[in-house]
Image 1: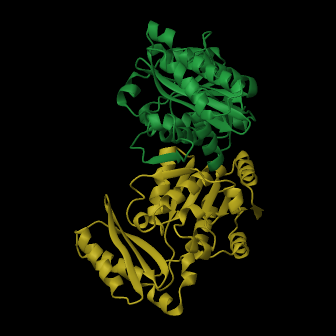
Image 2: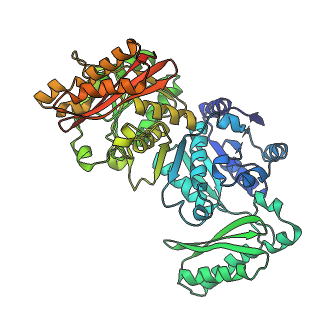
Image 3: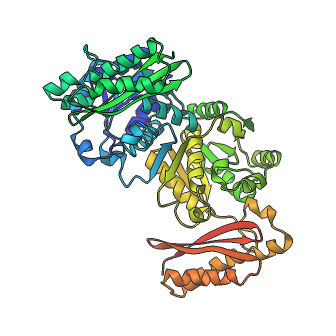
Length: 273
Length: 273
């Protein structure tokens, strides 16, 4: 596996792959790789000729300095996992390499980043859209793999690719869960034992919402209420939101909650009633 | 000359050129090509293996619908001039090709787009930055030629390329002027005979500012005042701004004025006093 820390080096490596006629699969991450990321890397490996993973904890998408500081980082473990998954290029730039001066440029996607995560984390999606635009400008033509766990992020990324005409095909990959339903997340390492035991309440809430829809509940507000009720019954959980996005024939159910001090999100898709 | 109207067709044409090892020179324009554009095309031709010009009147950078509607358009004349200048690829997309749906994504460059044109034309530089980002995402690696006449635009474009790490080298080209000093601009066609005769007042104002600096005037406010005074003495002119940007060892003098209903801008560089 080729480990590269400079923008120019990464760009040239991918240019050389494409010059050989190879399709590049790109997996942008913030590191702290887990089995969820692994599923993205494997899917990219199955569908592309060459796989590149980027590891960069993007300061632009963090509202609070302590959240940024405490975000888990372990490049050696990430490199080992990436190499084990057959990754060809690991791009791990320093903050100084990505932002040598003040970053004056911002990319924003109207509306899709409003509400839910956008309301709870002001500036978050502008930070995401900006770093993803920069990574796409560096990486060039590719298929880019994103997890459905960050569903709102996925809609923002899809839209900026389409609006700005990047030569990128965005591929959405299913959320990977622990056996008890907890969606895998780099933030899960911050959960205490009791909190970890409580954390599957997000998935139980989504399951309750899905069950309500399957029973024929067609009022989104009542589906949201059913999900919110489950989370509010868990003493260690503080609900942030429980929402329903109506998308043609499918509904997307989304929840966010704090378990202790750890903020978790999850979502599932159901057939519209 | 290859004329292409689709994003995919233009991208593929430039990919094929680069695959042959050729360096692409890109000249983004809004059409209504004049000798100023011609100087960009010739410079690109001298410095690159292949030249591509884009002709698209970008609605995002117009504040007023009537200004957008009255912006001069003549694709046949543009194509003839581009072919005569040895252009290889002319990209002339429709508005529907560039914006098939609502454009939710915006690119903004903080501070550099504030003041001057940014104050007089709210949203203008966000529109410029957004369309230039999209054109760079479509065109891929290239040298991109911009005129110094739109000096603030040049600083915005340079910064977004640097901040977002596009594989683009921005090349600034000197303003081309009529013998009486008027900077060439697509908007000049809207000037009446009397307005055309009055329009060189912008250049005379810059010359007066430069003369003041050469005489040792080191107070930017007094240099601005000297420029503003010249413009205010011209009955057909309405001053919008006269400013001095201090850039290390060089100062940039910039003016904007309406001559009748036609808004004109100009700037020159002088050695700092």
